Image 1 (cartoon, rainbow, N blue to C red):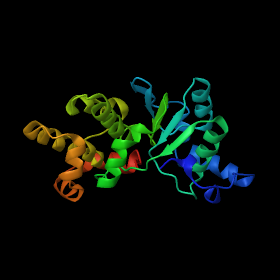
Image 2: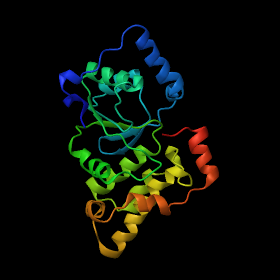
Image 3: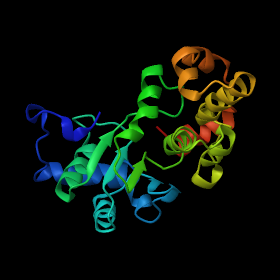
Image 4: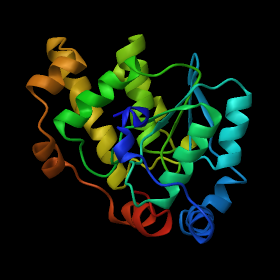
Length: 229
């Protein structure tokens, strides 16, 4: 899971010449980085964990200067992804630990991915910046987990991280995140089961996906206007 642990044989080639220009074009234009240059949607979750949208190299430089030690990337680490390669190179240059935990926000996480999401907090070294593309949905999911699993904040209270304040629309397909957590909260009220035990013994992503209903107009905004992943 941790990028720094990849064998040398799997090391990515450095971005040089035209490839580097393509990487910057992909980040700033195709990935909407020009918007994040103005507003990164960066917020403190608790203690030394922050949430944000996809940082650019100059954002990472500022983080390193401010004493940050870890970057938790929720978008993935595909070898042919220019945006990821640029982020990884920058973190290596700055001495930032980069951890990749690819998750999605418009369908329930697979059980093994949800367990990884519960366990990932044991790997981070704060201060930590956690990011997805827009800092709204996947960071909201992980912030909720962090508060509930690591700090014992009641699930419904922790779900305050899934808020329109951060750009999260629970009425659209991204509302599946809220639905999963609310389903657990109801079950916890009935039995007192912990989230980890619920995931390991009762969690059924396919059933949750089948029973969730989104509002078409909100999903249109999420999918076509905001182009959430």
